[in-house]
Length: 452
Ligand SMILES: *Cc1c(COP(=O)(O)O)cnc(C)c1O
Image (tube, rainbow, N blue to C red; front, side, top):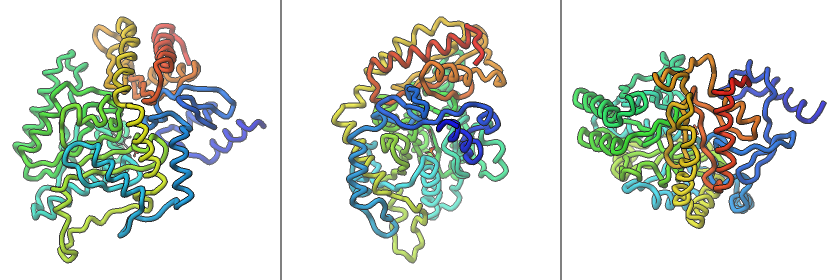
């Protein structure tokens, strides 16, 4: 038995992978990664792959980055973990100061957790208790957007709206108001009409029910897991303004969009929106360690700030809240952002990728190419004219990404949407090679009739 065969057998016997039908997986030759270097990942057989989805949208500066490794080793020699419950540690404090400095106006308080989903749970619970602490006990409900994804814990699933993932759990979830997300491609590319549908629905909910609504939660500018849907200009700003008018808190879930991904440090910056609560994760540690955070305004925080007897404390925490190793690598990550002028670089690289992908515009099964910064989704359709989608059972996205893997690049589809989310640090030459593989995989499968 080779090293690979042994690991694959143990994987199939004992490891239950997330978001994975294990019956399919166990009938395949699993990909087992051993190491990474820059934008490349290497499997135990020694094959090299471009990390075309930043290891599920996390990676920033590449893998095995000396500066980030060093930050972890330095901190490791001091202390690996110390709690934030009623005390603090050095990197957690320093990172909080940095996050307040770079985040949208007004977000002055940082509450740590360990994943995007827990960050969302915290935002939802904070918004709920904020109104309770103010004595407005009727404001208990939430607004979310159609096809939203906010993570996989029960609270995060409650404010989610992707039927494939969420419907099975519906009986155990709290109900929400769901408004449409502006999906211009499904409005004959009429951005104004798509935006109006969203704003009208929001206005209606607020007019009739604002007195029972605590907050809205939104994936700003790019709705990720639904298929990389891009909000038309102005929509986010108008949504935030409406919520302010009606006294409903605005929660921005920047877990996917944060840290330069869209060409701004945060997607909210693109429209100068200052949310009441903001959730960050994924790129926060450069994709190295599980740290997330929920940022809050002073106004939110101050409703919890009281004599202990008033029982306004936020009773929430995790064993690893504010983990020093994670916070240390997050600080090193943000230092590299500055030293390498990374956010500006993303805008130039995005233009390069956009020009390259334009070639696909005429291909008969490419319906829509959506891009914000280095977040790219290509929607494949059976019929370009009528925009008829491929049947889900054809698993067109899975076949295209399977082909990409054969050609040496990793990514994961979202239904019929092929996702390309390269590490922000990718060079133009690397992006060139990656987009070549991406385009060839799409053409091979949709036009070459290639079965993979
Ligand atoms: C990935 C993601 C989450 C969940 O983050 P986890 O770290 O996987 O729990 C939440 N919201 C958005 C927008 C995401 O993309």
